[in-house]
Length: 66
Image (cartoon, rainbow, N blue to C red; front, top):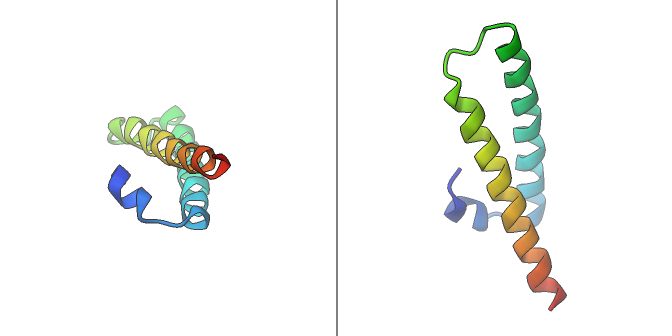
């Protein structure tokens, strides 16, 4: 998910996407341990998506505090 797409979502939608992505990351890690992941780059992309969503939520919290 691109940053532009995340910025268009509401905070509740971002939090929901963040929970979903975290669960998916957990599942991917478990599948990686058992050797069932075809594309290991999925893990990296998912971690970056999670970081992107957390960053945008933090930016909004800082902006709201001002």
